[in-house]
Image (tube, rainbow, N blue to C red):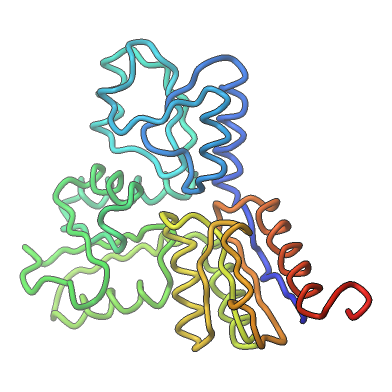
Length: 287
């Protein structure tokens, strides 16, 4: 059985930066994050055991505590609430997420009706909407409203969306008729690279494994792309979920890790696949 790992698998720059920030801060004492710093349960649990406390709301943060703003960013209103509690704020927002927030805020300030392309409940999108309070969030062209509330429309995207999604929504907006349309493709280059690599690999393999948190938007998108290629695809969080029937009959297996998936998870999964292959072949001597 041949095993191929997709190019660009593992931590992206923004996630690696956030991890480094938390590592530095937790070495000094207890740290709070509003929501998990990244969407990977193994990483979050490791930090929890070392003193990182994950809360659901800024109102759960004790007065004067150290708070790391996670890679997804935070709405300006929540940041103000933290300052009001005397929190020491350490910002680990991905620079590309921060850029999208700035674009949304600029468009809103200049009087554009802002359209955000993204998963409306994802924390990155929630933070984006906080930068442009009147924004409309859409996940597909079919959700573009008939009444856009004016003739000046601005568009930004969640950094982990796909470029075809972005193009489709912008096309649907343009079809509305005469308007001033300003669209910023704020999808990050690492996302595009990963999606392209998965699309390429999925077309060559018998089965595809995409590794990462089930609450990770970028990882879920990779699994969706692999399925769209017609490839049998499994979205797993770790090697513990691997079952023999998942690869039965496969000659070529593809593996990809999301942007919030540590390299050690990808490596341990490949090793688990290799052990499974040995067992199926009847032992090391038959490999």
